[in-house]
Image 1 (tube, rainbow, N blue to C red):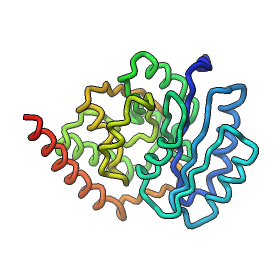
Image 2: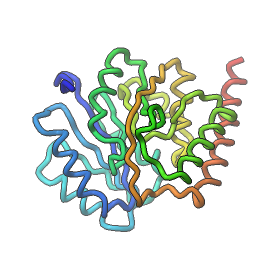
Image 3: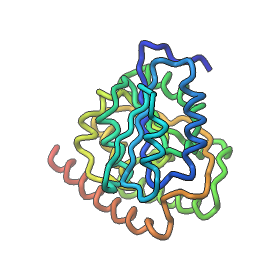
Length: 245
């Protein structure tokens, strides 16, 4: 696919927590993606990792003007890290990705081309369109069950709120980021709902998801937390709706 024209600057924001063992492959893919591009920066956010993630990120960033490392000393949660990363980003467009690049950089240009059509466009990946994404059955059941709860409790009709890839104009979502209240696993739902309530357009784009062992999200450990988070969001947006009436 044709590379994005250089007049549009792009910031890839990647939150990290205890990812030392998986960073080598990420660095290699990012080097290939940034080759011959002078309009891309990468913002890593170390979210209070207990391993050597921060050290590895800083070593990679040495001598690279287009690589920024935000080193949070405490764990703020995925969307707490994303918030800090977006605050440091300078690009016209923001690309959110998981640091393991489970959705590869090969989908970035297509997503940006869609975002360029309208500054109100929020592009999110959809891992479940064509069946090309290979996800363990336990995670697939959990994901589809969670999506059903999102539809019932929050009223979102999106098929894959939790897909790690999201693309949007940085300046167009300042209100949505200021209004975030869920900074952990349901930050995606909070962000998307806020965007829709502010008349943004959510556009889903088919992507291929490559699952790798080592994910920091545990179905058993974090399932209850995600469920409670959805109820907090249900209350939050019902309260907002009642104020608008």
